[in-house]
Amino acid sequence: MDLHKNILPVLGILLASFFLFCESISKTPNGYTFPVYMTEHCPRNETEFNERSSAINCTRSYSYACFPNEKLTLLLEFCYPNASISIQKDHCAFLSKGKPDLQDYNCKHFTYGCPDSPYEASTTFRYPSCVSLGYGCFIAEPSCENAITPFIKENSTYPIDEKDDENNIPIQQPDQTFSESVEKKEYIWLFTLLGVVIIVFAQLGILLFIKKRNLDLTLQA
Image (cartoon, rainbow, N blue to C red; front, top):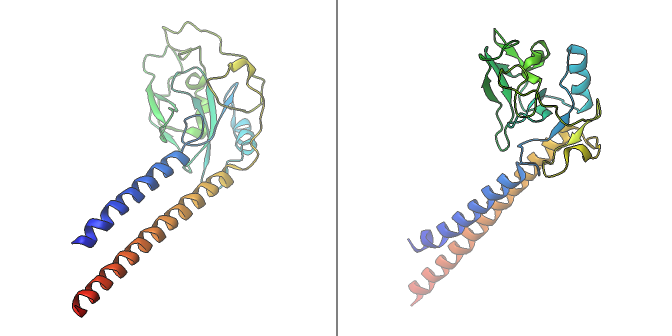
């Protein structure tokens, strides 16, 4: 019983620290759960889709995607951690900070261009209304004031930092493939978990040794 009382608090602290650390490394500095980049426009045809997918190095089981942010003020392109992305009819999609999944946006009220059948993210270019923004709204919405989004140099990729003036964000190309970035995080998780396991078993071994020694001393007495 004493052993359990001693080991459980240690185990709890170590596991809590591990989960907090994993949460901290699972998010990018800008609040998204994977790297995202700002773009002037999403691909307008299959050729552009393939070009942008190659430009930001979407490889292996990650699919290229381009959707608005949750405020409907920016278009974001990113490598999504699924081989395919399905979207239901009468809906567009957007990406929220801190959420790994795309969020649905009902577009039945659009004056034009709302998808009338299910579709894949790779064919979003067939529904430009889902990626055509005013500032804080979709242009196809009756209530949209059709505000102009900040100018961004065409075909350039920018890291997102909404604290900065959007007109002055410096151009920066990714310095490694997305898969390399993901693999690095996977290794960090693996080694962190391994470290936690080693520490827990070391603590358990020490406590067992102490308990055995105390038991031997008691028997000798």
